Length: 464
Image 1 (cartoon, rainbow, N blue to C red):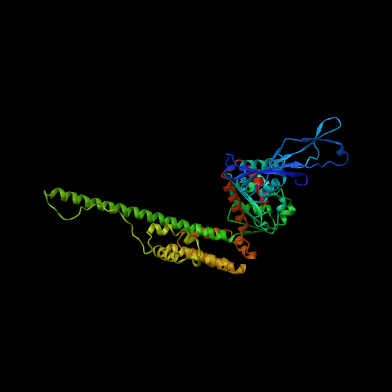
Image 2 (cartoon, one colour; image 1 turned 180 degrees about the vertical axis):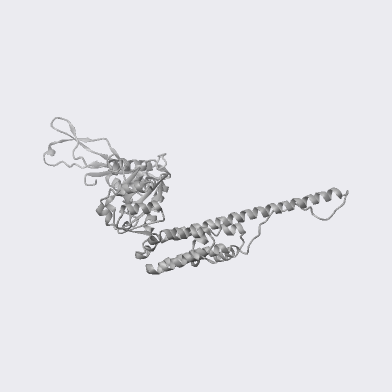
């Protein structure tokens, strides 16, 4: 811009704006620029005729100062006496009163970072609604996006298909979406392959099969959780891929069963506590009636001082354990403890675990079974060695009397081959979980999604 215009003057004035964004500005910096005389060749015959009215352009803020560029273009008279303006420079972003450089910066930031327009605008003290409108309708390619019409139902980026993929489901905009991702994207650009509304195997497979059969046949492995629909999708779409069930989800499934046992014991403890409180209250009522009967039969004489303070009803206090917890509090505060490996416990957790396992030996037995599975997946073993250890674990689970653990055992047993495939390359579904977390974090910043296609366009632009 300095090549075409010269700075005439710079004026700083107090900021009198009353908008929310204006409150953040210390002052307003007005930079006045006049167009240089850029006539060349035949244009030298044109007669200067002053300047146009100033055009207002917003630029980068400078040290908490709002910057306004006030540009005046030169006018010339041609041979017929008509006013003309030379050299139509690209001074502003199309559809926005922003300098070209500032608009380009906003576009790159919105295209690459999972930030909302309001978050980005806050750094430059601009209205978030203005930035979103500029980006959506002028800076971005959303209006001509080839997947805009069907984005609510599905989005497909076949160029991102790779040899190692992950598939998972997540909730977006009140609906469950299936997301197929490429591990090589590492949760960044090039990660998203497909986003399909719903989890029905036939619907999702129909969209994924729009990718050429040659590309789908190149997929060597795909990781997932225990979902039957994800398993059916992988079977239909990736004929040559090795299906791997993530070890994290195996342990998670076992911990979910242990959690259900913990909640069952908590309900029993709460019931036991209520019964004890009711019995204590009943006993207090009985004592109060006896005292009232005694006072009735032995009325206090005038001036008599019996010397003892009147006894009132006592409140029930549950038994407090050695660490300061009641039984209900002990079970409640043991939730995270049971989900962790024993070597991660601190001193307080170790004390709480000892008390918990002394009171409920069934939880100790179930927890020890889960720790044995954790130990199997931590070791570097061959598939045959792991199979032998898993079968030994099945026998131990058969001996226990907890239906929750047996249910988890049956789940693992039904997908044993896919579970064992983890030990081929020790591949996990962490990339898919990371991508889901980033998308959910981006969605949480919006506090509600009004335009689903535009949200999915941004997801595909940032992660696709």
